[in-house]
Amino acid sequence: YQRRVHGGLCGLSAGSSATEDGTVVEAAIGVMLVTSCLSCISALIGLFMFVWLIIGTIWTFGMDSDDCNSDLYDNVKWYLIVVWIFTLIQCCQTVASMFMKSRSS
Image (cartoon, rainbow, N blue to C red; front, side):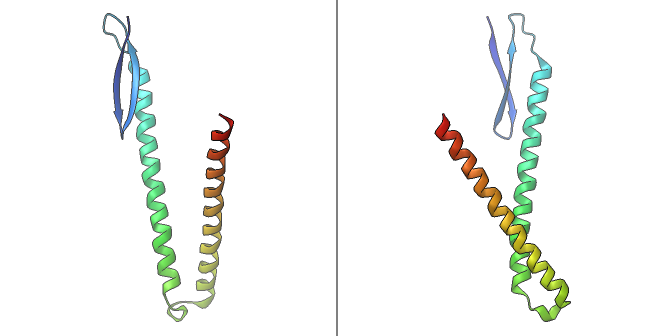
């Protein structure tokens, strides 16, 4: 006889098996809890960086080039263009990967 013990963080559930005498494999719950926390923190950092990129792009392209050094301004504009290109490539790769996985199963 086994029952499932659930615990989780950020909407993710971590489970481990409990035996008849009530002992729980604590290590499995701890590892799953830490993994859940790290996943949530990573997602929040990624979201923050994406919002930062959007705001920085609007701010940079919305200002006059007369407000700062023209060479620096041109380099920042090209840097942002390259970052957006790589971001779009990564998004396309992710969508293509999910599409290929769904077709294979």
